[in-house]
Image (cartoon, rainbow, N blue to C red; front, side):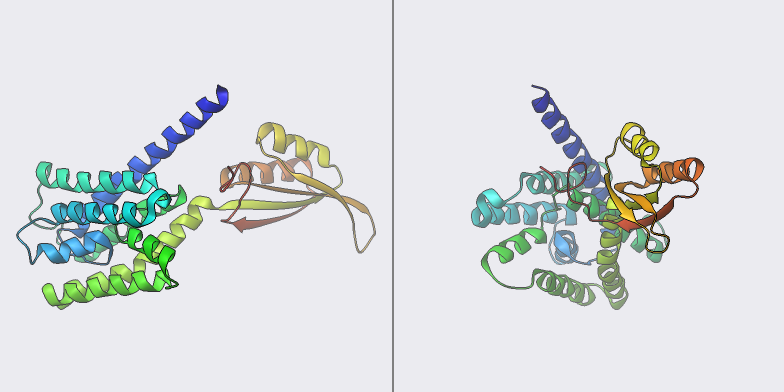
Length: 288
């Protein structure tokens, strides 16, 4: 019973996070990307280019393209097609269409295209990082990548980059060189921002503590910080004294508490603190 409650709570938390991330994506795309005709990849980039050639809005085109790609995903991927991606695709498509109805924008928010480009990059990239971190994606061209990954040996990253580059080139032809160059800058910066945000979200501190009295430190880790640790005995190479080594991993806020506690209680302890953004195991990512 309690296990089911915990599972339901975890699912609710995940979908709340997915909803918030998708709304951030909608704001970044609708407020900053669409009005400036920024076309750096993805379904929204295709929609921006096509909206200049067809008598319809980018939001409507995003909805249509996403629905087609969802159908492709179900057809070729079946059970491998994640329900989270479906949820995000539907919510994003509906959000963009409703934004066009409720908050129509016929011109950019400001007269500073560089400033708007920054927000058009950062907000969707931040959203994408959150989505990737909980095992989802924004759908769209990611669905094509999933299909290609299943049926071909093609380098997916390179294939998607070429697709996105094609959209950028199309924006140069459909709009003007300035819009195309802005879109190219957005394409190059997007992946860097996503990677850095994902790394920042997952960043943990790894402690290697060499001390003489491990019990108070272990007690602080387990009882106060609610973490665990690995303890083993060692011998110093210079004086050959017996030492205890404690290895533990925790979030950044907890790391500050542990570091300050050790400095107060055992100033002679030797501490090595390293960063890691890929921790897999109980209490961290990748543990089922």
